[in-house]
Image 1 (cartoon, rainbow, N blue to C red):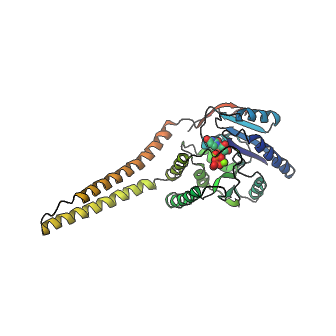
Image 2 (image 1 turned 45 degrees about the vertical axis):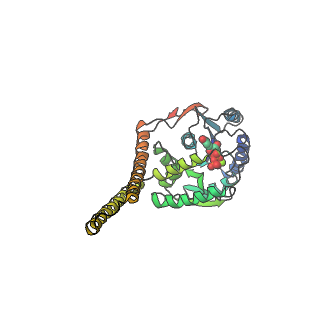
Image 3 (image 1 turned 135 degrees about the vertical axis):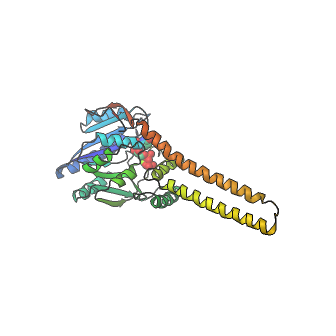
Length: 318
Ligand code: UDP
Ligand code: MG
């Protein structure tokens, strides 16, 4: 069996060589079991020596394939490129920063051989800030209420995918990619195991608060139109309340005569309604924006350099 390791790399000059050494060691251990390995490294427009190091690795090790983007297109695009350029019967996706322990590959391959199409490594949140842990927990609780696929906290992109899962994921050509959700959507027999999260040794996480917020929004919006529906119900509920309230005022005025004008209530009602409308507009805008991106059908990434023969020069949406 040929196993592809797919690793997106963005400014990983400090760790990439060590990463390759570690996975090479794993590859040696897997060889007697009848498994070959190839390494697909996607340089996501790094501004440091990552690409240079990848080229060196490729010269030293014929199993190394690299793809380099013309600029930073984001991890999701890098993952997609990695899957496109991987030729293995099974593909293991992992971060290049050594936060995904390569020793676990053995376990993944063993579980795959037992017949699981997706082997998912679930990390504990050791080393994460308390705030990030709590918000993540709340977020997943909310998301699973709303979306159609089940997303699990701690389940990231460290997983093994069988060839048929990879092909299925590659057939999904949407522009706004939320891999976690796409993998869950594809399905097939899956199994999950837990591992202790390693703290990043070098460099720093490229997630900003804003990045995380946007990522969270993608997870919410990408998988159905339930938020849109919720906005509709909210609006209807509000309208009903307003109707009842108006009726109440009219009746009160008829019975008691006109009392002091309810300045405060009017202001409250107006602002509440305006707020509600803004929310609804926002939600509609979210979906429209996504349609806009899909319709444009722009490529997910542009390749600047690669050593993969017959590489799809660029990846178009449809
Ligand atoms: N990454 C990438 N493009 C980006 C940001 C990150 O390819 O724009 C890669 C990065 O090199 C690493 C992985 O995605 O291999 C995870 O990134 P990071 O460690 O910053 O995220 P975290 O581990 O905090 O989720
Ligand atoms: Mg990391």
